[in-house]
Length: 212
Image 1 (cartoon, rainbow, N blue to C red):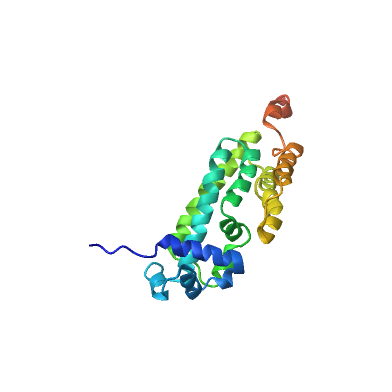
Image 2 (cartoon, helix red, strand yellow):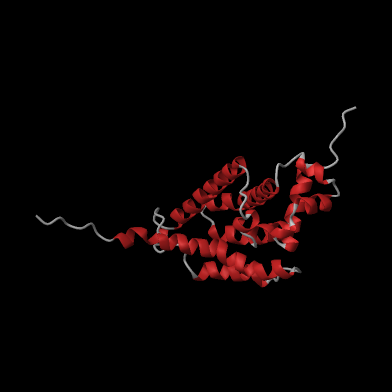
């Protein structure tokens, strides 16, 4: 009979996320991750070459989960729905949300970056997400991606929802019902585009007449 592995790679990934979410990056040592899973320390080294590899894999998994939810909505030009989608994504797995939204990669990896394949995979994820974000901004405006529009979109779609979520993620408990209302009201009160799509032709005005 073939002996199946008692501990999976995902067990260690989930343990790493939980430890960072609960105690910060320093809590996620290789020994602590293995202990959380109930595995011998040697077992984690059979799957990951280093602590940076575990945390890098965990970060990529959390980021990919986040972007899978938002990317289709961004491509459809639905910034409000994308912002609101962050709430159920976070509530589906609060430890994963705390891991991703309350920490920065620089704090996770300190002086040891993840292995190159993980860095390259993250760059691809970031490039795909950035393309969807810029496409959303372009649809909302006149097809261009100006600095002000990008800043507005980043605030409305990411920064504001995460700021609204942050107190809940820090203290836990039930997400207040006004969180979604606040996000919706922000989008209703602040246009994403400096020149909304329906006004773009009027805003251009008549063509200038060449002077001989």
